[in-house]
Amino acid sequence: MAENMWNYAPTAGHTPDADLTGYAVEAADGGIGKVDKHSSDVGSQYIVVDTGVWIFGKKVLLPAATITNIDHDARTVSVARSNEQIKSAPEFDEDKHLGDPAYRDQISGHYQTGGSGH
Image 1: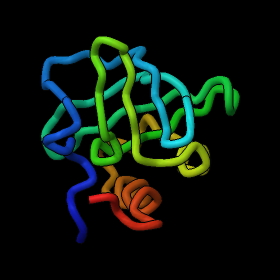
Image 2: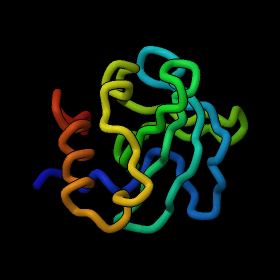
Image 3: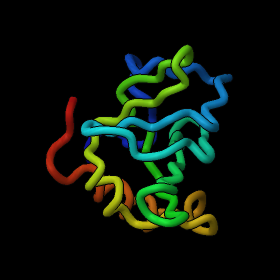
């Protein structure tokens, strides 16, 4: 399997005690929504993005490895994926995201297509 999609890159600017809730999420080609929730558990790090304005109430799970920069002053999270990749992601499933390896593999596979950045 490729690099672990569920860990932050050392250069992302993630700090374990940071609360990212409410931060604006910037895709490679523009804003996509806001952070609804996040996890800092090593090996299971992610953010859930509420795409609100794009798709009525759709929430998507983004593995931590997709995050390229966290700017705490500007309250923004930059991700190395396009709006289209994020919008076409499987919808966030509250019941499956923690304990269902197949769901996590589906999410990882979605974001790994098109090549990895690092």
